[in-house]
Amino acid sequence: MNKEIPLINTSETVDFKRYEKKFKALSDQKRLQIINILASKGTVCVCDLAPMIDMPQSKLSYHLKILLDAELIKKETRGTWNDYSLNVKEVRSLLSDQLCCIFLPSGC
Amino acid sequence: MNKEIPLINTSETVDFKRYEKKFKALSDQKRLQIINILASKGTVCVCDLAPMIDMPQSKLSYHLKILLDAELIKKETRGTWNDYSLNVKEVRSLLSDQLCCIFLPSGC
DNA sequence: TCCTTACATCAATTTTATTTGATGTAACTT
DNA sequence: AAGTTACATCAAATAAAATTGATGTAAGGA
Image (cartoon, rainbow over all chains, first blue to last red):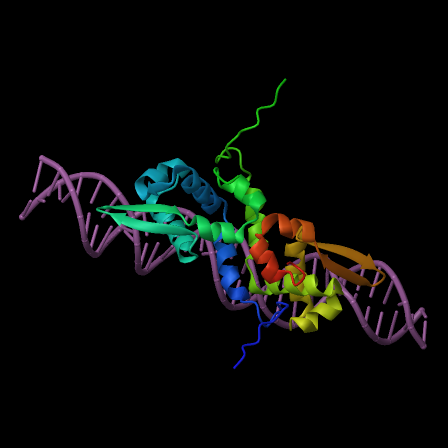
């Protein structure tokens, strides 16, 4: 009846695979730059974002998908446009305050 | 004479490449597991670590090198042995308190 | 309806990362 | 000195991720 709650997280209890995916999404210069831009601009559509980071549209969509799949960003469709914004809560749950200060312009 | 200190970190001021490397090192299940083990055991030599994570020695050395190059772990030679330990300060400077709680057994 | 814009997705290629088994080296042991 | 243990590193093979250009689709405008 009582669920055991381990006091110490070991190899058996931590879901490493889940975090691998999050960190993989973060482990790219361009994607970090996208996060930084979304943090400062709030909400940006793909067509506005592409010139900001000097990237062809298909490439940008590829990277946005990786960030989206890792739940680091959010997507909202508005007519023909797709607006992307940062999942601030998720990013904050992963990164130290120090890093949030660096990456999120409104971070500290 | 006065050095400009930007109040907001933009694409121009953040060293994304530096963080790409750190996150790349974190973006692997096995390497996260190594971090977790080092956090709980303190200091472990390669020969003891290998059976813990069920990995051949050359493969383990490869992953340890990636973590070492990212400065997430430290290495100390003791005779024939190479002892590895976590660079707790560095890891804490990257990960949220919440993640430290999860990955570092003595994290919270 | 036809044209244009905004975007995702696809297939082919290129680049990077990982795995594997072998080899090299240095320090201990006998 | 010869054998053994602990480890790094290397080259070859494999696997995964990223890039590119093309194609498809849906919405909005003329």
